[in-house]
Length: 184
Image (cartoon, rainbow, N blue to C red; front, side):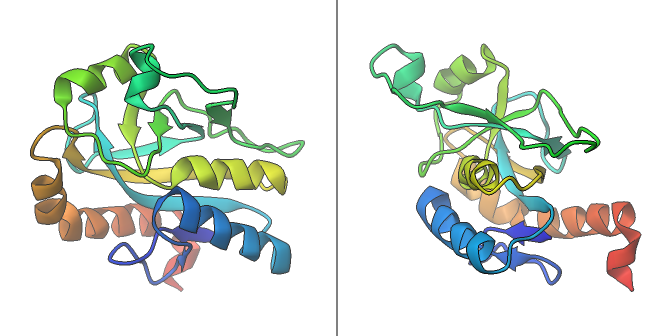
């Protein structure tokens, strides 16, 4: 099953689950309780911390929920803040080292986000950590496919808005090329 955030980031072949960590967790939990899918593929946009370029397609099966204050040693958490995709026996791995960080906030300080890169975290998407966490809870294999819309810097929002429509087209074409059965 393909899932996406929602609002202005919808796709005809994907079920919207909500924007941000809370909405996506609530709605994906509801979906898993009442109509549990066999597999989840989360698709959406992401901001790059510098490694990936605008309109790159990036796949990932690792998510984090790390705030900048944690990397600056100004906060701590007793919770696991990095999660790998749930795998059922015999699943083919989609494992990559493209760790996607999730927060309800968009990073806009390019120098500060370089702290993420020191920990191999390369991009951010608001929903992916909650998608991974819920898939673990319900033992649903999952991975994400992202298109880069912006760099995480002081132009992040402006770049996102100007690149979003084209990015969605590029991601849709990538998905249709990879999963040819969707075109039928």
